[in-house]
Length: 456
Image 1 (cartoon, rainbow, N blue to C red):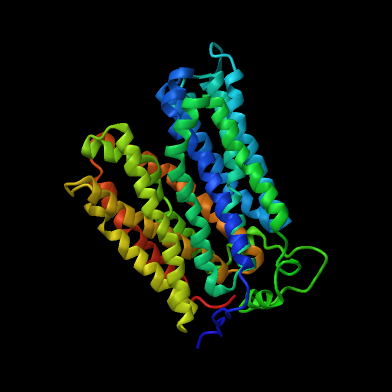
Image 2 (cartoon, helix red, strand yellow):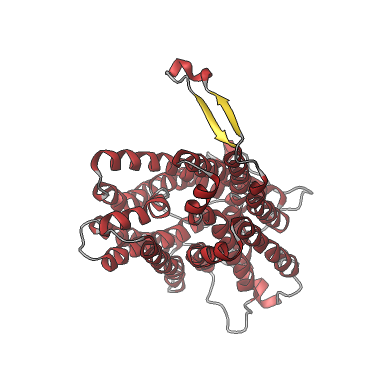
């Protein structure tokens, strides 16, 4: 028999918890605007600053690896100092880093930094790496941006675990995670117009300043749910329902070390899902525009429009996937059944993506890929909730951070593999074919490691 589940929310229980979810939504949207802006401005920046393709690749990879470490360390930060301080620190640092990209306009264009690679002589590498000062400046800003942005998702998941009963966590996660798609949709429409009006330095300054407005809203609205003056007694009781009892006060926050974290089977299940399913999003972020352009010979504006359509369709998946698990729980299903069936439906929705390179029209391709992207978001909402379903509260952010670290590092290697495949075959067919079965494989591994999800 499964443990007792929270009952549906009474009509007058209150809705303030959804205001907190709204704060998370906007932090994620700003996060994605600040990370995606450089991709939108790649052409103008390369022209004005004289970047080569490899110069831009260095800047992009600097963010990827920094974000992986940021995800890992950010989770630990949130567990150690708490959400109220930890999340605004992350937003403040990445907002400053985002704005600092504009300061690179002050760097001389005729100066370069030479990096001696003779220490790699044993590997047959004896050349030097020459980086223009503008590239070094952008790489530095991207590293700080990635490190700080890495704390956003672990912090948001921990916030959901503290503010929502178990039956609403996947829905809340899906709602705030939709902010990533909104940010990705807004970027292609807003940033080019800002660049045309003000130039790229001011564009970075303005987008970086968005985080400062969020900080004001956070300090005005956020407090721990146990002491929040705007939270009704009824809503506080509803949030507590189905959550584990608080640990006895000891004068210090409860901590779970890395060794203890790796002792949970659920940790290995979460990491397996991160390795298998997580990197599929790399295809959409970095290769979907290229795929659409090559498959249908579209001009850049149309590629941008269809990419925005993809993100719009994908934005509904996290909400739907989260709602679905909550719906099953509300009908009396066990956490195990609700979570796994929701993830199975998401995995099945990805399967048709293997057809994407073969259909005759761009709208049908975007529909198929959009369904897969939507399913990925629904899967992610439930995977994040799997962490709070199975782990002690003090370890949730650490696990999400570790999983993100693994996923983004795997995603880096995935991008390299895709590049090799495209170089040798010129086709995305095998890439989408492999992607189509990764979620089913991840769910199977998760089920083998954690046959039954129950209360912590």
